[in-house]
Image (cartoon, rainbow, N blue to C red; front, side, top):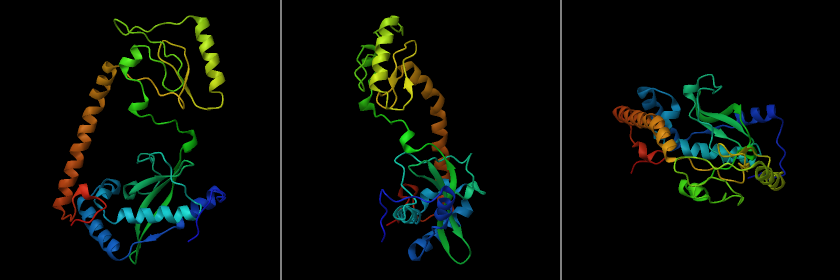
Length: 268
């Protein structure tokens, strides 16, 4: 097997897209039989393939094989960021037939389909769209890396750069205001320390103390703000879970031979 290296030069964008589209992972033996059973039930249940792929035991081995085949030829370097999963901007002729989207580290997205030509079944991927490369994606911060709201109000410095955030414990949600000389001094230091980061800047509302979105975790939201957000997205998430449960019932009713929590694994 030929392994790709960092020095591998990728072909032009047009040739690369064509080469990616030509990679076909043929489903054989147990995987082919599993696909046929899945496809029959999927047709009975109806709906986009991306919603039904969680019931497919054949899918994960096939997509792993596609990624390996594309990677060893130097055509693909899997992104460390989450793939774009939306369908509203998918450029496939039949978005409902798309099973998933994969993302390359350079921002290339491909949509994945199972192609059945009546003789064989193959997993293929085609170019969908471009987004920003991983190198331009801002960091994803964990709760452990960010300040708590209590620490923010207590005046704890930024855990990323050690510079002040300049909020004081208020009786309401009043924000401390710095004088102009202090602001200029702080931001001059910021420009010196983060000149090569190439990332956007952020500051707390009412302040002008700049921080780097690549080096400095953003401040936490106030509990009242979090509550408002929860009231907005809570019903949406709840409805999503309800729809998933309904889909599971329809799948079982169609004669599924695996449970949704066992997607990608055969039922014992």
